[in-house]
Image (cartoon, rainbow, N blue to C red; front, side):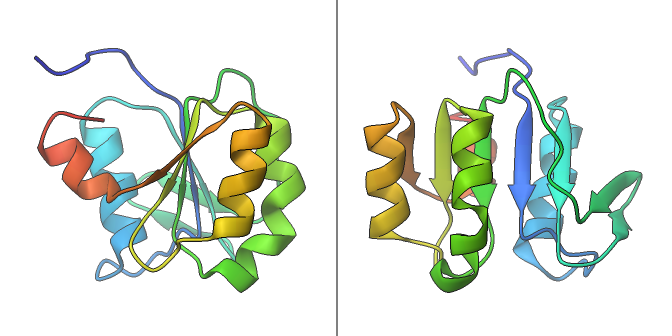
Length: 124
């Protein structure tokens, strides 16, 4: 049985392009009832989810899901760690041993997985 808890999820690397996985993930997360904060490199929107460029202070973050290459992730390390999420999902192509180690050292579960697959199989 799927977990029905609503999990605040921060999508980093969000794109307004409907063909991008980050767009699909944000849309499907919302469709599953999860609150979404989408952070990208320019202001735009995914449906009615605004894509923001700043790094707001957030509380009770369950998941950070990454859609940017490891080099670009570096500028987000401190921000991600201060969010204190329960886990960080490293989607295919975003695997980053350095950030995964930092996460583990800070009590955050690093998970190499696909957000879309986790949602579609009830494992999110």
